[in-house]
Amino acid sequence: MMIKRKTITLQLLLATVFLLIIIGFIFVYSASSVFALEKCNSAHYFIKKQFFGFLLGTFAFCCIQLLPVSLYKRYSFLFFAGALILTGLTLVPGFAPSIHGAKRWLSLGGFRFQPSELLKVVFVLYIASFLAKREYSRSLLKSVYIPFLAIIGITSMVLLAQPDFGQTVTLACTGILLLFISHFHTNYFAFMGLSIIPILGLLILLKPYRVKRIFTYLNPWADPKGAGFQIIQSLIAIGSGHTIGLGLGASKQKFFYLPMQHTDFIFSIIAEETGFIGSIILLFLFFLFLFLGLKLATNQEDLFSLLVISGYVLLISLQGLINISVAIGLLPTKGIGLPFVSYGNTALVCNIIMIGIIFKLVRAQQKTKICYV
Image (cartoon, rainbow, N blue to C red; front, side):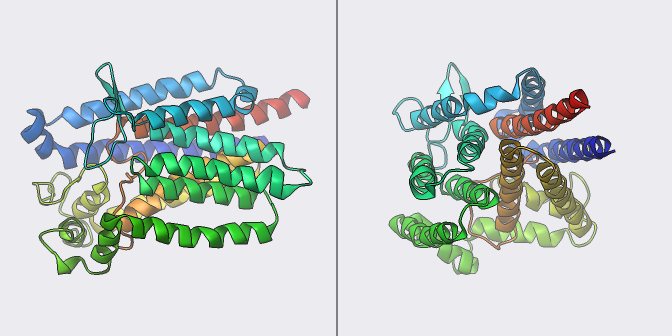
């Protein structure tokens, strides 16, 4: 009976993810068609690339099912180091083009991808493996907390150099939440959490554009045609949707009013075209994803699987929360897309890989129980 319930929960999780991807297809095309026609001479340019990303992610999902779970534990550090090096290559002149003032994409052989997305996948794997191996460690300070802070610190320095402040905060928060789930000493946990606050403040103060974003967040109407333009247009789009929206494809803000309408601010277009009802449905799907994912995680018998599943579910949910909060003006602007929905090949592939690993871990435990019985 327990195995059957887990199977149903896993199937519901996959169905939720699939619905989010379908919603993404619909609104990536709706939001990007005008922009794509103007810039790329094809209204289908971005939706074709998004579909290719889905096919590539599906292929990766299937390949993951062929790999043993022990591989993730044994080689998690090598995966992490490789992804960190790839992300670091974006800082080498000639490897990474500058887009919107940031160097986050590698261009190799005419193929462009964002290595920090891959870093998210293996970061959670490595943190989970690291904490699981030290579950019964006697010297928590030397064997757990100091190395843990070093992992977070090195990862953050590479990401901040791009710069990618949003990704840095997301991964750091996910790592700290995994440490909390691991049941380590609350005093160390509280100290680490409190110490991060002044560090974040310092990182903001060191970059004038981040300070400007804070002031824009507090009062976007102070510069409605400059720094506040994007968030104001986002709020106009959301407000225009009212209860049921303007209708699919009927967005007005996508006509070059709202920048990044198919990436960071796709939620605004969804709200404009489907209204309050459509927005609530989308929020419900992300809440359902979080609930089902954590339910699967808590049913895992080994700490590694629990941490990996929790990490992926929390990371994706946290990204979704930040993206929507930015769109509705609750947070300063960040370069974070809406998982499974926003346009972005690398992000979609890596998000599907996370779901593939979750699927593999849950199924592997089910098979072990069946064999034992």
